[in-house]
Length: 350
Image (cartoon, rainbow, N blue to C red; front, side):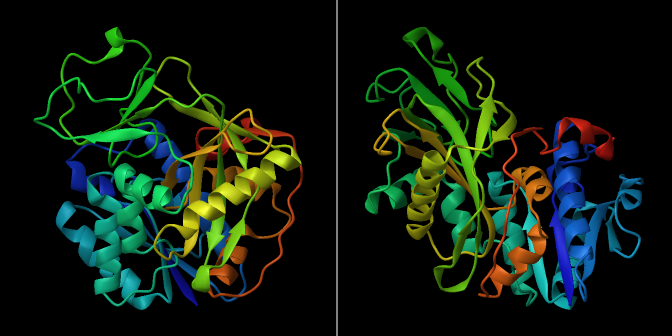
């Protein structure tokens, strides 16, 4: 069986945003996810792996197992052609790309149009999760707790007089991670210039920030993985700097219930999905809120695979096929950086 893995930053997606060379933390995070997933897939008997590579990343091939097939993307016009070819010849495709500007949804469309089979979230799920406002609407209709807020559109009054009272959080409606997120804790914190894109304005929720990943498959199969605390900067940008676990059992149970309810409110999906949430101070979970849903593999995979006593990618394959799976994880404690790497493993992606 051949599996095609596409990671946007390393795999040629940056050509779509211009001629800027992939570099910095985004490259480090993308490469960490790609390496981890590909190494786990390549270790499975009977599995062959194909990836794409940005032609400017000449050393990327040395970071991957030698048996991995690498297709090179050298300019914007060739990306769709190469992705379609790889997806067509593989039995399954796993896409890892940011949600903003419709980048992930667009590539989902390329794969399915080419006749490929996605073992990552399909376009319907990606489009719903990529819009913060649509996600909130879907979850609220199923009585899943989400922050109160509103969608602001360019051209409307700024700051909006009907916005909820501070403290608030501003975030692009189709943003990815902490991109352009800003806390508004008093009236003076509002930016003078309005955003250029649709923006979600929502209530700031106090509590412990956390996330949980789930393996998803046919007929609503959900396999939750250990939840992690999220460590964010305290400067009002909420930039993600790493995570830690374990959560105590009661919090883990609350995380699983909240995430399961959230995904049941969304379109059917497949593969690795993340849910970000806030754990409030009520022991019964009544002050827990879902913040967003990530329709893709996240850097948490890199940390979780190190605690997993089996092959996490192999478990994902079984779940995508609708098969039962059992996994055990070491309890930790463990902390990891924003790219999922443990401190002692930082040299792996250097």
